[in-house]
Image 1 (cartoon, protein in one colour):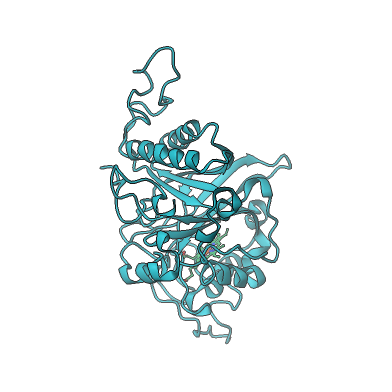
Image 2: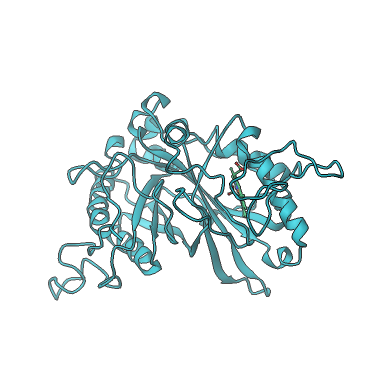
Length: 373
Ligand code: HEM
């Protein structure tokens, strides 16, 4: 398949039909010089323009340069195609502190997330000044891209945390079949999708009138690493599992309906008078009707980070969501879920990330975040 274009009004990797694999990284900026930060972004942009087209990170490549110098590509993707690679950058709230004189540019929509009931966030795998999301059909290609950006950034940024994901848990286009998360349920059915042009304009892309002109055409990203208590879940009855989500496990249809894409009817009642879709079910609480019509573009991945030494898989969902304003979208939705979702018995939020993803790169003379600097 053809590589996804790197240049355009929006960054690739947001409405791009979700690829199968993820390597997500958050960096801390270690240089205190703004000029060094800007030149890093320029070098990264040039490398990303090449990598996403299936080329090596630098023009000499892994085996073609000066034998006395370190190669400008690490080599493990030699011979592999672009594999649908997209690279998407975002700037965390901490980039807007005093270090680089950017405080006045911090978008209001990049509001710090409140503390949510029940979360147990691990600081070492949360936050970050800059993130890069690499998505591809081949994990080797995604990892190669992140590794080379980290290599280029040596001395100016350091890796704060990173996360691999192996199976998409969302579709972002109607052309895609809905995948399943590690609880075995179809995930992404009611997602905001590429084809929902008007909804994307209203609820995905930041606009000039939102207050931060440099973000026009960009989007705000929230990541949450959500551990699943897999072993407990696997002993829950099918009926309980379906009641938790409000959808059936096989087809993914709303309870009381037949097919995956049938409209949800929250008023419908079973013969015993109980609602088909429980009051505290995930889909009822997350539904736009519960939050002033707020939608998210979900783009998460399954993860398994080995085991925890206590006989359990260290597994779950690396949740990724894009939106126009976290104050109107992620925050109220997650507050509702954190307080009431039946799913909470089986999950735990362990990391959190928040980033402003700038608009796309226009051409070879442009670079990631130029409008900010
Ligand atoms: C819907 C799973 C966390 C927001 C769904 C669905 C499933 C699911 C199976 C129904 C199918 C679909 O429409 O995609 C999970 C799991 C989670 C999780 C396993 C954690 C491990 C979250 C979080 C949020 C969220 C943290 C946002 C704060 C939504 C939304 C919908 C949804 C907005 C669509 C509701 C609708 O319009 O019907 N989720 N989810 N989910 N989820 Fe989650």
